[in-house]
Length: 89
Image 1 (cartoon, rainbow, N blue to C red):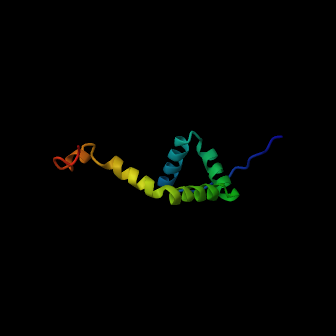
Image 2 (image 1 turned 180 degrees about the vertical axis):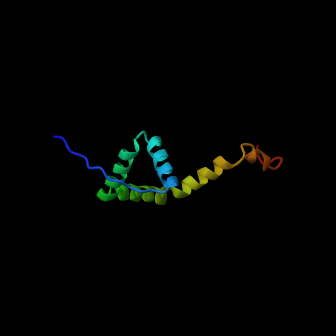
Image 3 (image 1 turned 135 degrees about the vertical axis):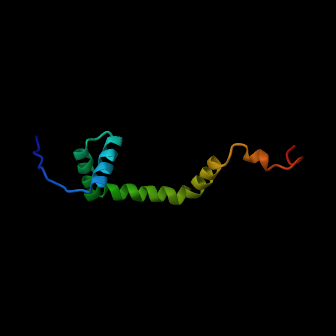
């Protein structure tokens, strides 16, 4: 079974087009396939389902992720620099 695709023309600002082409390349897609995928995901509810799942994950684990991020951003020697003499046995 073959499907015939229809061609359309879209006018985009140059920076929007460049961003779209970069996003497509980052996903290993050509620009047409990228735009097609965005439309399908948006119109079938797949994008909304993914966003809802991401929000649930953040709601459940956001505090842990924030703490982890803070720890990763702290200088490596920070725990040692703040210790007082004799504080650790």
